[in-house]
Each structure stands twice: as structure tokens, then as C-alpha cells.
Image (cartoon, rainbow, N blue to C red):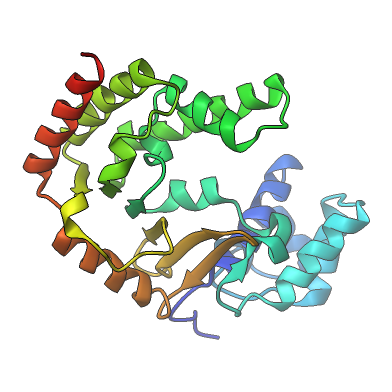
Length: 281
């Protein structure tokens, strides 16, 4: 069987779960291959998402890996039946996909934000204020964990082979005093510092742009490795939605339209710095 032209997000996520289960049991590919009476290359392709795993093989692996929880077994079996479907609502998919996992695999992230700055660029103080406002009924311990997760995620931008982050920010975000004026001023200073990095581009969509192509709000486009799909992501009141190629091209077109209206990186840097200074006067 030839590998598919596009490996779906579902197939990648199922493969990731199978690999983690194998490693948690201290098993090698050859051990699993022997158990299933298949070659190690086939097991590797199951784990990369390139080849579909048959239901009997998945049943056998779940037994081998000691997955006794009925809900998890059912979720993985259901996912295996849907690996060629593209896109989903996370409200429907539950734990089938993880935004942080997707973010960490991207080679390029294009982002539009109109309420908050992108999480990958948050200071801890800004992140805490934003999370506390959104998760108003969460306990302090949970808030602490979410802030830690958000700051840990930022490590992907400073690695040996970091993704490109292309961020378009509505000008209103520069004035929304998340955490207060001092917190925002510090955050804008950090934003300017990040924008000077070679793998990060920040553009501001000015008020003067008027109506634009994304009145519905923020979204992301994750460009993966060559063999994998391009993913469009947006949050909605019913949960987040993930859209795969070729349908993700609508996100790409919207991003390009916004970029045409946005300031240049140099103009944006001047505006960001001026806004930060104004906050401290």
C-alpha cells in the first residue's frame, strides 16, 4: 500500500498515542513487530500516521500495552476508524488532538489575534492576567499550571530549529490593558524584543485599515513538514475547529488579505514602542 499524499491530523495523533504507549512499556519496534507478526517498518508507519492500523491489530496492541481503561480504549478504537477524515471540532473529538502537540510540530505558524497577543509571546504576568480573566472559576493551583504550560511552550521559538512565527495583531490589542498599564507596557517591550528575532515577524493591523477579512476573530495556520497537511485552527463558542488541506486554504487567503492591510514590521515596531511609552507616562 502506498502512503497517502496527505497524512491526516487524526492519523498523526493516533500514531503519537501508540508510540507513547509503546515507549511507556519499554518496548522496541522489533518487540511489537514480533508480537503482531509484522515487520518493524510497518509498526513505524503505524506510529507516524502513514499507514492505517487494522482494528484487530489495534485491539492486540492495546492489550499488549495494558490499556485497560474502557473509555480510552473506545476513544482510540473510534479514532482508528476515522483516520482518513479531515478536521474536527475539539468539542467532539475530546482528547484526540492536543493544540500544544500541533504547535510544537509546525515549521511555520501564521497567526491573527484581535483580543490578546499570541500565547507564544506572553510574559508570565500578562499570561496570568489573561488566563485568570478567561478561567474565572479556576483555582489558583490550576492557574499556576496553565501559566507554566504557556511559558514552557515558548521554548519552541528558541530551539535549535525553531518554527517561523508570523503574527498579525489588531491595533486594539496594544491598548487592551490586560493586567493593568504597567503589565501591558512590559508585555509590549517583550513583544518588541521578540519581533527582532529572525524567526519572528510581527505586524500590526491599524485602526485605519477599517473593515477586514476576519471579522470573526483570531485564527492560526500551522504549516507542517512537507508530507503532512496544513492546518487551519480557530476557536468558537462550541470549541476549537481544525481544518486540514485543501480546505485550510480559506485561512491562508484570509491571512494574506490581512497582511496586505497591516503595517510593515518596521512600522509596527515603532507603533508598539510608542504605545508602551505612552502607557508609562
